[in-house]
Length: 223
Image (cartoon, rainbow, N blue to C red):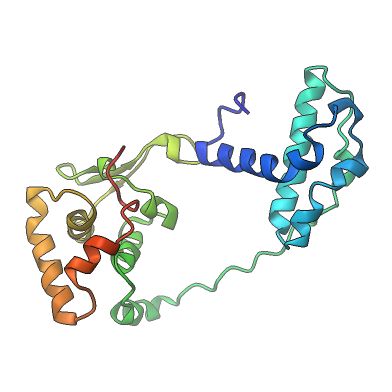
């Protein structure tokens, strides 16, 4: 896998984990040149039994990629997964229906969330970041003075930095969150005080509870 320099670290971990957990127990001790399609079939069966069809499909593809690499390096002569192309058909993905645009104001007014759920939801609207990018953000990615949020390329699928300008509303939310999950910068102090007052006024959240229960890996300092 080291040769796949275009893979993100997260995708490489996913491939390695799936092959180690689901392929190696069935095929890991067998000589590559002796593995046949019937033996390869044994790898995705437990995956299909737990109804993880997408994982089974990826597993077949990744096992095939191993064999195709080994053919080019003269370790074997054939790819036993070639005959198994229709083993797992692509499942039809049913996405959640989008929220009608005229329903968004009522949704935002009525949605309370828990902990950082509501401010994180608002941040998605202000930045158009995906949930994973919000959850895995690091405070070192935020440039308070330039009002920019930079996600480094090694975290992005295309490998290049992604930069989003931050509106006043987004900076207010980040200032609130920074006081709860990081060390508060002086410029954001007023935002945190406003947030605490709002929490107590609404009787939804209490500051001591937030400080001990918030998942601190979300919007966390860089290690």
